[in-house]
Amino acid sequence: MAVLIAVLLSSTACTSVGGKDTAAHSSDPEASGSFWEGIDPAPESTVAPPPDAAEGVAVPEGYEVVVVARRDDPQASALVEAARAWAEAHGVTATVREVAEDEIERILVDETGAADVVVGAGPGVVDVFSLVTAQMLERQFLVLGAQLPEPTKNVTAVVWPGASFRGTGISETGSDTGSGTTAERAESGVATGIAAILSGRTGIVLQLG
Image 1 (cartoon, rainbow, N blue to C red):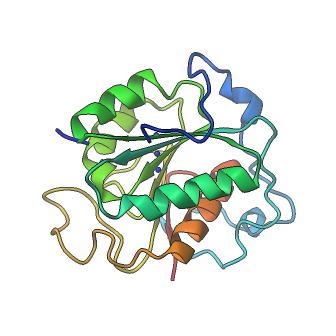
Image 2 (cartoon, helix red, strand yellow):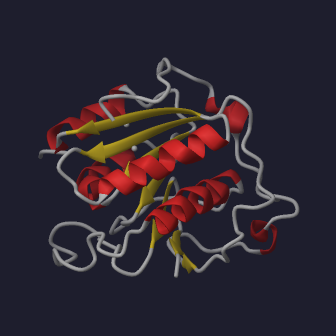
C-alpha cells in the first residue's frame, strides 16, 4: 500500500519518539466543567458534540502529537494545517509526517512511541490505520475527516458531512472522501477530538455539523 492520530516530512517541532511513558498524560474521565463530564457514550457510538465541546478540557504540559498524512491525499493539507495550528496555540509538540501509503505502517510502528495522540489526517490513512491500530492498543489515535470500519477503544474519529470515508470496499470513493472539509471544520475537529480523548471518551465517532 502507498500512504491525523498525522506525521509531515517537514515538522513544526520534532521530538524523540522512543519509549515515552504516556501514563503521565492519562485522560481525565471526569473532565470537570466540560461537556464531556455529562456523557458516557458506548464504544463505537456516534456523538454530536456542541461547538464548545473543547472548552474546559486542559491540555497537559509536555503533550505530544504525531500527525500522519498520505502525501497524495488532497484532503489532508487542511487537516494537517489545523493540527499544526492547534499544537502551536496549546504549546504542544507536533511532529508531522506526510508520506506514501506504503510508509504509513512503518511510521506508526517505529515513530509514534513518544506521542500522547497519533492523528491520522484524512481518508488516505484509513486502510492502513484499520490494519495497525488494533495491534497498538496502548496508544491513542484520532482520525480526522474519516473513520475506521471497526474501531477499537483506542481510536476516536471526527467526521462531518462530505467527510466520513470508512475504508476501501466499504465506502464508495466520492462525496464522503473529504469534499466537505473546510478550515473551520478541520480546526474544530482537531480540538474536539483531542478534548474527547483527554476526557476519556475514546473509541467513538464525533459527528460535526
